[in-house]
Image (cartoon, rainbow over all chains, first blue to last red; front, side):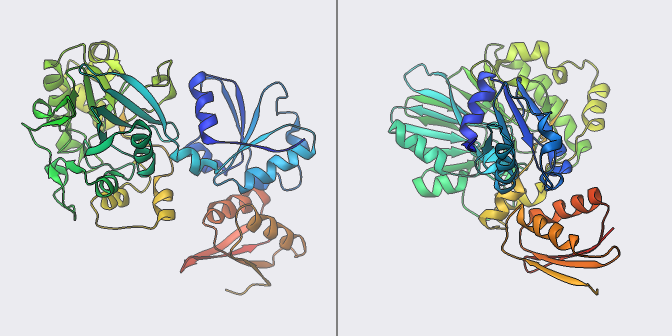
Length: 375
Length: 75
């Protein structure tokens, strides 16, 4: 039986379509427990490749023959090694091309909707890391929001649509992934907007994103004014696009809320977080569609693979928005903090332009889950 | 630290550093120490985990100029 390759894109389709897949993840146990491919109908088994050097006889019984089997490792070498042994033993198996590194970087563009005066909004779902970024397209122009590290994806997508990127935004200084914003802005001559309170230490030129700014993309107004929304970081800013979509950055997610400790102290910012979620957001229309910068669990994905829900639904269903008592809220936020994302300090310094690690190092810094939320 | 045998696995990608380590270990006596040089960063966590699961002892590991060195005592 030949060993076949499966791309990260094909795996993404399976996750979104809820297809059945059996994954044999051959990374070491600690990497596996840190982070893995998840999906509603994905069954996964972890056996490190170095426990299979003698042969695969012992695991043959545990591998199903009635569904597709994918062998996964960090980069791909070990998965090919194991897949070939399974194949020699008579199984038909795939390996993940580029391994978990490719999975971490893959983006799946999903159209969220049309804008009033023509134009569209797209969400880029980074399934492997739970990052969400956006492109707003109107009248031949485009804006990119909260871009991930590799600019090519957005540049190519804009090219396919025949639009020019004129504005690039980050809702805040990210701590879980390296922003591609600066590179995109440099290569397209677009304006790069950052909230100044998050950008005090950056080493490059940017346009300060402040209350009162209204940026126009083609025919679409991106209204920034009303939504200075600190809490995850001191500068965190949300955008309302076309009076219909609320880009909430890392403040509000579908099933959780932002954590306040990645750039400072939880105790200092939990008050801002409360104010943003329980006062500023309360004043907005319930009908706004919330488009966050992350998801944490695969259940947050809609049928079409998008991550979006009306603000009113979140006020009713999101646990983090339903603490009447401020003290209880503070306790939930500061008492439930998950481990910090891998390399988050170095990621912040890279996003400030203070350090410039090489490509391999940057890729490695980003590997793993995003961990930007508290639930 | 003194080693009984040296394995140069520089430039090799996963899974080869461990495949070669295992092979070298097979020819050694219990208590002897194998010194391994590798450049694949993944080897770090994997060699540690492999040593544990195989009953060997990872005595020491260092990193210098992108070269990882490991000393594993055969169990």
